[in-house]
Image (cartoon, each protein chain N blue to C red):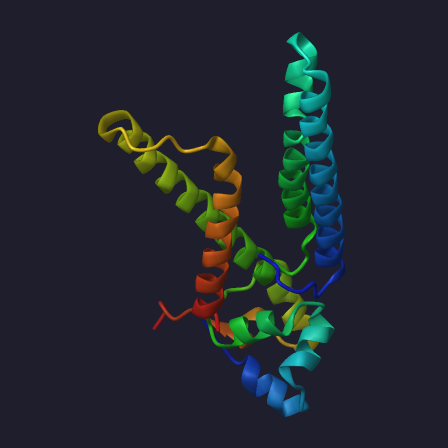
Length: 66
Length: 134
């Protein structure tokens, strides 16, 4: 799944470790989600959305949907 | 599985697993010394023989508790994949070996080796899984 995490993070000048700390997950988790290797659960996606003040759709996009 | 504990759930896992391993070592010594010195028979022999296996069951339960307590879903996913690799690898080896024993009469596999074998495959799977997500 594509996402805008790297951009959103950069806008706030947060490192992966900073974001991981705010989400209460490991830095590896943030990296895996950011690189599209791991799709977060709905609760974690909502947590990300709340953190960035955006909707889940504004952060994640389904690659299968043109 | 986990190499270095990074969160409270992993620290609890390490502590519980270490306690279970110490219990295993103690139970093994008690069991062996019991058989050497007292040569028990009947129910007592069964109980003494099965004693070292009980901490192993505790270790397996500790893994289950850890998976339930791990709050980092990505890390939990990695651990589950590594454990599945361990289970799959072990089942593959004992299945193949079972037929080799029955039909080709190779040396009998000591069942006590199955549990360490499981951890060998968990170790291999951990490396493979980590490389996949690097």
